[in-house]
Length: 288
Image (cartoon, rainbow, N blue to C red; front, side, top):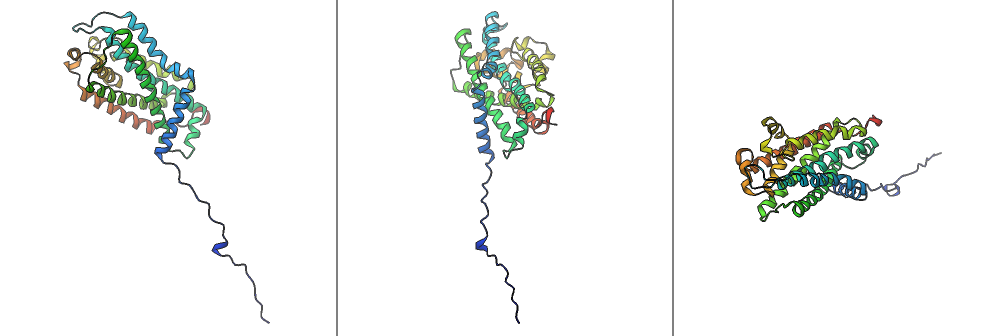
């Protein structure tokens, strides 16, 4: 008697097809999407827009109305000098102070932790923030320049070289301040303390970097200290853009020194980017 055992046969054709896996979006697409999301959220909140843009405008209106007279050794009115400085301070206010406070709040709410756990490359978060401050800082600068021109006699550049200089000074300065703000959040323990920790260095740098007072009239130790940080180089670069060429006579060394300005701001972009990469905290105190 012959016994045969029948075994179920499985063929490749009867196996269900493996589900197709879509490749994850690349850094470019996720960064673009994150940038659009950041801009949409910001401009849909009128309070955020007003809070971000108002302070430099208020300072310009107050101090621009108080200060008057020529700067010693020049034919330049102090109001014109102050407008150039407050444009740089406005950029730092948006890119450093506002960004650091906003990131500290997002971290404490757990938003950054959730983004870090998503398929989105972490670098896209930083790109989105930098794009946001580039756009808002440009808006801030244009408002201040328009007010300075209309109310305080600021002369706009009449040649391409000065506008090109404005372009790279703006981009490098904004990027340096934004990345510095991201790195500085490592020192902020909670959202409640963010403003108290971020505001003092910003205020001090304004006073020693040639925003409120002619830089050449400051004590030498203040000039040296200010030269360590990017705000001093932004103010010097914007004075080149908006003030007469002869004003360089009262600048340090008697020259504008654009190559040194570019190197200083570029150095801060690299340094702040490196510090952000190694110190940025993705988790707030409530989720540790």
